[in-house]
Amino acid sequence: MSLRNSGTNEFKHSAIRYAQCWEDADVMLAALNIQPGDVCLSIASGGENSLSMLVANPAKVVAIDLNPAQLACLELKMAGFRCLTHAELLVLIGSVSSLEEYHRLFSTEVASISTPQKTFNFQEALKHRQSKNESDRAAQSLRVVLYRRCRKYLSEDSRVFWDANGDAIRRGIGHAGRFENYFAVFRNLVMPLVHSKRTVNQLLAAKTIAQQQEFYRKRWNTPAWQLLFRAFFSKRVMAALGRTEFQFQYVTSPVAERILERTAYALENIPTADNSYLQWILKGKHGKALPHALRRENFDAIKRNINRLELRCGSVEDALNNSRGSYDRFNLSDIFEYQAPEEYRRQLELVINAGRPGARLVYWNMLTQRQCPPELSRFIRSLDQVSGPLFKGDRAFFYSDLRVEELEKCLVTSAL
Image (tube, rainbow, N blue to C red; front, top):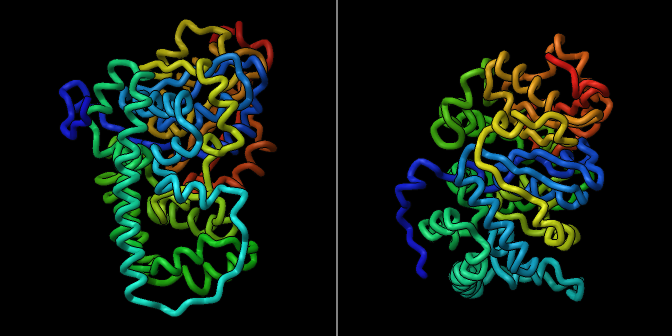
């Protein structure tokens, strides 16, 4: 079996949009408060958040997505949990560059011995660069080997998809999405015009919040940063490289200003050192700052419950129709901001009918505000006391709002 780089006809129009989940799973889990035995519905996207739900020991998690490539992405990660070690899974995804980096970062036997400061030596730097290139090539070859081990756990459709995407395997599947490629352009082409790698590393180093705020104001928030950020995260550029025009059809607010405001808040007020989303955007890997599903302490629970994750290709409406009183928890990502208000209302009605008494739902708003309309407030109760504190610490900082809602009791049998 060989890995090909040319796509097949079946997947020509089915590319991965999100190779990772870009909603904070720690926030999602705290908001949903999943109980053992719950039945959950989750937007699949890159897959990590659906995997994270397994840690809470639910009876079942139904991961749904309209895009079959997203399900292929999740299915490969599921295969990784089935047959790889934790270190190998992180290499396959690209969270770490190599097994050597994994052991350097996560081994408890590494002694914290301070070494004298060395002066710069060109020959040593060149040797290090050569070693890094060799390590990168070795990691790419290892990912192919790891994929071949995972392949037998994939459906035929997913095998066809990944066999045709050898470059994505070699780079690390966490880089395979349109959204991740957008951040790669920002990281590789825009950031060097604004800040050096040394400054980026200083931003991501552990600090107190007061130190973070001082660093942001004095070192990071330069005129060049603001200018290039506004240009790159404008509606036009984001639609061309990161999202699509369709995803902006209900956006009326200034896109770049909104995202810059949220980014400033995060860089000043949310710890940067353990922010997996920020680490990936600026460095192209997670390192020690792993998202919930990829942390070592959650690996065994996800592996143990992996058969409780069910994949379905289709719409949320497909999953909710004819499912009266079936679900206890709903992870709905940010799907509502792409819908017209009347469509959003209709989807909420389906959630009400498909949920059990006391069921919870969580969803995010980024550029378009959606919250339960007044006419449905007798069915759905907003849990602002839950969402408020969680949103303040949301490490996926580009969202402008977090909605946590609960279905009122006795509504499952109500006719809308």
